[in-house]
Each structure stands twice: as structure tokens, then as C-alpha cells.
Image (tube, rainbow, N blue to C red; front, side, top):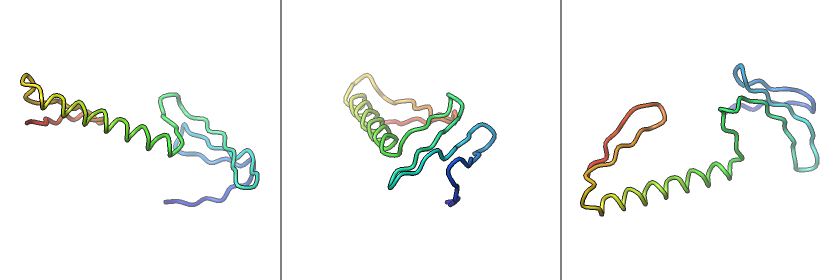
Length: 89
């Protein structure tokens, strides 16, 4: 983890395409401006955690449903970096 101190109006660069600017500080709130490519997902932590949880629940539900089906013998999962894994019964 990296801790960086910035003042209002100062910027932080993450790689080439992401710019974070501290725009306002009020009591216990900090406003930031984030400029990044649309292909980059930017979410608050609690939203990210909820999406991960809901995705896992949905996947587990599908996995259990397919296992109960007599026609399903395996499920192919393509993970984000392109590798394939087989989940067999």
C-alpha cells in the first residue's frame, strides 16, 4: 500500500491514462475528480463488494442448477485473462 499526501488542486497520476485530482475537503468528506478511460471500471468499495458478492451468488446458483440437470456434465468458465478451466461433476 502507498500513502500519498496531496493538497486541494494537486494531482495524482496512475499509469499513463488515469488522473486523480483532489478538488475539495470538507470535514470528513473528500471530493476527487477522476479522469480515466471508459474501459476502466471505477467504483466505490461497497459497490464493488456488492457486485462481487452478487456475481458469486449468481455463479454458484447456476453451477448448482447445472449439477442438478441430467444433461450437464461440466461447466466451462472463461476467466478474465483468457485461460479456460473445466469444472466437472
